Image 1 (tube, rainbow, N blue to C red):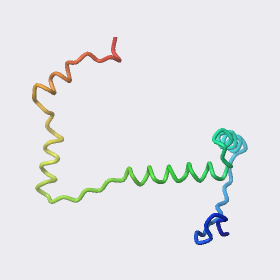
Image 2 (cartoon, helix red, strand yellow):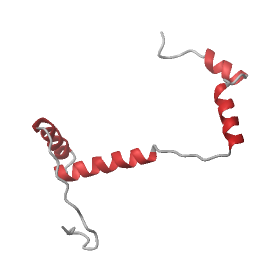
Image 3 (tube, helix red, strand yellow):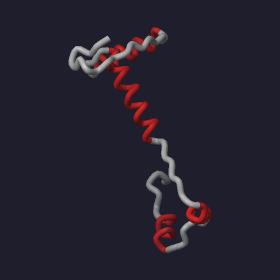
Image 4 (tube, rainbow, N blue to C red):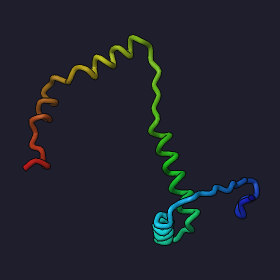
Length: 94
């Protein structure tokens, strides 16, 4: 199926089987954003896919750097700023 707005972009059909209550929820949300249910689901799926891929981080370092990194993680900071932070009043605790 070809997109009406740009003939150079090919689109594909995706069939979904969802419960009636979920469909009703999607329809209401789509209407609230003045979108079709299909556009709403495509936007939501695209955002979820981007978030998933952006959450993936891979760093490759040499063994010496990795050992240093682990040592930093294993030893808590011991300085005035850290002590002040740890002793600061916590607004969520009364």
